[in-house]
Length: 463
Image (tube, rainbow, N blue to C red):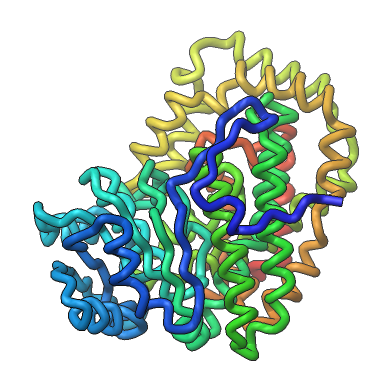
């Protein structure tokens, strides 16, 4: 029986793990109750803050920011603030423009950054606190994504979604009364983000098998606890009971702590996030309003689990032929001067448009599609094929996860959030190029089955 991890035991934790690393987190305080915002002034004083810088957008200001301002003013706390204007039909992108606006209003005498939000505002605040050398506190407005207390920030640079190091919050304030009034789409997005862990944890184990990547069973256990809490709350969220909102929030917080322990997003982000990021980039290119992160991740999870379900019953590849082809290409000359690299680069320019130079630069550095690297991976995949199939068989059925999301009224197909068939096809083939991170998409490419699986997914998710 797996151990259940509780949030309280991990606050401010630092310990030597059996994986050989020392895990620690800056996140050390959590106030999660009805009326929690009332305790913000006292919390800031305990943390040694004399003048906070409060970041909101117009949506989060209306949801909770106005109350934060009122409470601080009532307590006589001097503070500076910025309120970013939210689009009428979407969310603010976490890009250079948004970050620039936050930085330009940043006062030099501020000694604490306080974000009032969940996704973008959280990422902007914790990244600013990191580069400015200030501590960070988060007032969570909705349990809609799992990055609330992680030590990384997902920002858009040169039209490409990139994960940057950032400050995990010292403390989290979550007013359950306010969060229970969150739109249902925010609650279902939080569930979608956590259900994605079924896929990304499998991706992580897959990479450990194929590439010998570092893997930590303790961090995996924390993530499993986050999934369990989410599954416990999911079917009851429509009732908006504070106890169920708290359970979901605790699951999201556990996921963020796990990322902080790992020092990156690997335990919480796999192919389901990559395809979500790819869709988000296309929205930005086309001027389409943003869709909630967890909503897109939920869609990506249903699709990627479908691939794992297929992998579980897939026949053993012809490794001799695959290795012979890779060896021949490796012997033909330098990878970056090869016809296949030229064809790949042309496809990146089409599929990634303005972000293509950064994607190409990543591949030049990572060489993940280079024949020599492929040949090495094929040796490992052949050796571990039976274990890989067994791993795939342990994933939940895609249809079961789809049913949970549909029960919450969440989208489960890309076209339900405005993603056209071409972007779905390109995402399946090329979302793997966003990161140097091994996932089910790279494995299927390695064994020559990704194009086949693209057709399967198109038939089921983009007809």
